[in-house]
Amino acid sequence: MKDKEIVIRMKSCGLDELSEQDRHLVECAKNATRNSLATYSHFHVGAAILMDNGEIVEGANQENAAFSSGTCAERSACFYASARYPGVPMKKIAIAAWTKEGKPEGLDYEDYFQTAPISPCGACRQALLEYEAMYGPIEVLLYGRDEVLVLPSVASLLPFCFTEF
Ligand SMILES: [Zn+2]
Image (cartoon, protein in one colour):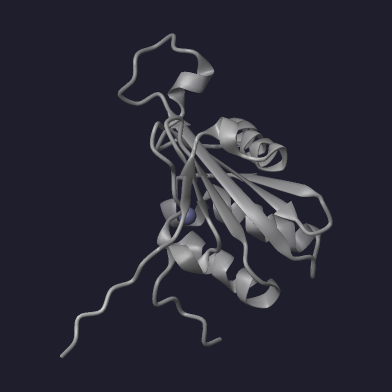
C-alpha cells in the first residue's frame, strides 16, 4: 500500500495585487451580495462570472423557508449565465460574502465582509465543474479582506470530482 497526496496549487494575494479586470470582477461579486436574500442564515454571498463574450453575470444566495428550495450565489450565477448566454464559456468566477452575525453594529459596510476567503460549497463546485468540463478551465477568485485566493480551475477545488457524465 502506498501513500498518495493531492496538492492544490493557488495564488494568495491582496485585492490590490490583482489585475484591474480581476479586481473589477471581485467588486462585482461584492456588489452582488446586496441582492442576497439571506433571511435565515444572514450570510450574504455574491458571485460574479466573467463570460467569454466579456459580459459579467452576477448571482446571490436566495434562501427559502423550505430550505432545500433555496440556492447559493454560485449556482444562481452559473445557472443564470448559462440561461442568459447559452454556449458561451465561463472564464472566471469571483465570490465574496459578509455577515453581521457576531460583529458589532455600525461598522463600515466593507468591514462586514469575511476576513478569510469564502469558498463554494460542494454542490456549487459540482455544478460549476460541469460548465468547466464543457468549456474549459474557469479561474476561481475567492475574496477575503485579509487575503484573496486565485485557483486555476474549479476542478482544483474538487479533487476526485465526478466528471464521467
Ligand atoms: Zn453552494
